Image (tube, rainbow, N blue to C red; front, side, top):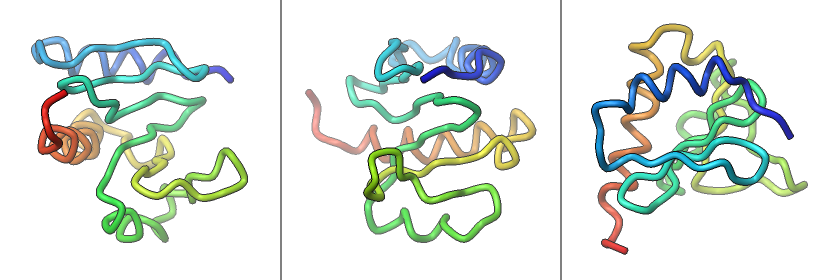
Length: 109
């Protein structure tokens, strides 16, 4: 799989001042980790964002949030956001911050 390098560049700019965010190329895309937990990934032209399993359903049904199903089975706790959902840097920041908050509340590794 490939990933959109333009989206990745926007994320790199967004995370540049955040020392606790690392990026790694994994699973055919770029993954971002916060305190050691993956919370964001760029895959093709999508942002894959970690969420509470119970919260995943709240974002489904929006036109820019397809079901996250790359294995033949929907993945709970992760949301897939099409480019339409992060057209501006502010929208991208809001989507990513939700995932960071969830990962930041997880036990330390």
